[in-house]
Amino acid sequence: EESRFVHAAVGMGVRERAVVVFLLRTGLRVAEFVALRREQVAWGEKVRPAVLLDAGQAKGHRPRMVEIAGDAAGALEAYWEEEKGSGRLWLGSGKLVRNERGEEGLSIRGAQRLIEGVGRRAGLEWVTPHSLRHTLATRMIEVAPVTVVQQMLGHADIRTTQLYVTTSREQVRRALAAVVAHHAAWDPAGDRA
Image 1 (spheres, rainbow, N blue to C red):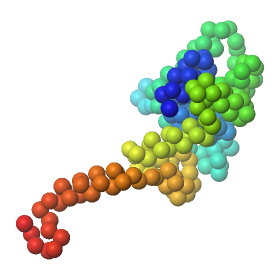
Image 2 (cartoon, rainbow, N blue to C red; image 1 turned 60 degrees about the vertical axis):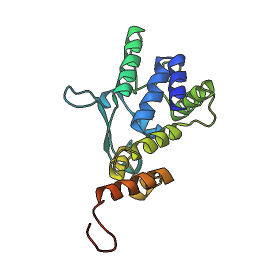
Image 3 (cartoon, one colour; image 1 turned 45 degrees about the horizontal axis):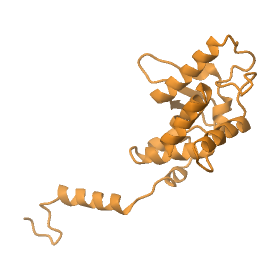
Image 4 (tube, rainbow, N blue to C red; image 1 turned 120 degrees about the vertical axis):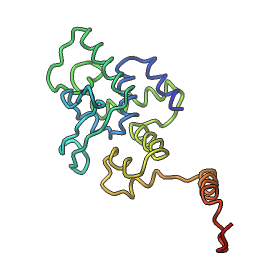
């Protein structure tokens, strides 16, 4: 479903792809995303692009640095290049992404409508900006320590992040098989082989 969703955004336009991929790869809350200004994106030669959320933008007023995955950075750059090529100047707020009319920054409701529209085009029901955040969290928890996911999502309490941890029977079987294989010489009855 994720690839179908992103593909639908690509078919709609550069702006839509930038919003979808950026939210899907950063896990930002929609309010944090629409509050971003262009100058908050840090492009470095030796580090990945990142955004610094200041205390006024982040939930709980906890500033944090969020890395931007390569495809999200590329989508954002493509959007900015299209904007620059259109001759439109970045007037006013300097927000990261413009609204549909190109007049000002994208609003929370505008971002929600955009995501819902992409979802409908992809044939998916009930896609929201928060479901994109949830998708990232679920994918990250499979490959990263819960504390890394907590930091990325800006959760104050690790118990919030742990809600994304789901354990399948197959994962339990694989983990048990790995432990048994690692300790094959160990005899639980106390005898050594």
